[in-house]
Amino acid sequence: MIKNLMRGLAPLALILSPLAVPSPVASADVVLLPGALASLNEAAEDPARYQKSAFRHWNQGLDPADGCDTRSEVLLAEAVDAPVAGAGCALTGGRWTSAYDGQNVTDPADLRVDHLVPARGGLGVGASGWTAVRRERYADDQGASATLVAVTARSLRDKAGRDPADWVPSDPGRYRRYVGEWVATKLRWGLSVDKDEREALKLFADGPCEETVVLRSTAPRWTRPRVRPGPAGTSR
Image (cartoon, rainbow, N blue to C red):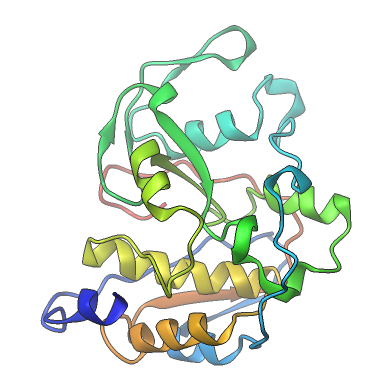
């Protein structure tokens, strides 16, 4: 599927994928996707599949005083037009662009907040020894804007927890960004890739995503708020 998706896309403009630094004190270096991919360890996927229930979410978010949980804070951060936050952080109005399919959404109830690298089948052996606290920190990580993304329910069902060996967004600009952010999230959390996953990522890195930029950062410290995006079409 991935090879078919990439056919005929070489002439298209490349989309760069800068990612937010996890913390003001975190050191980072900018690398192109091929170099970032080379830094990932390969390991067979843990046969014990992770259950979503093992990753407690949504917690009280970055600001316990604002009454918004992580999901609501992500929606506030990713809104193209800001919604109104009422009692209990109930959101009304606003406008979003779904990260996976580019659809415009004006009702926050129609959005899902997805882990770009899902717990179910996406984390690999790198997370096998995580404590409950670290799993929760991953589930609610807002230190980098790529970890959690607002998407339509339909695109989330289409993804179905699959890794880039089996699924990427269909739009070239979006899948280039997606692949770069997938690798950046794996590096950020010290996660491995399996053989099929690496081979698929290498096809992208050697082809249409060769010049996609990845910000390779240190381990997350969970201290930096997400940055509200600019107008539609700009980077988060």
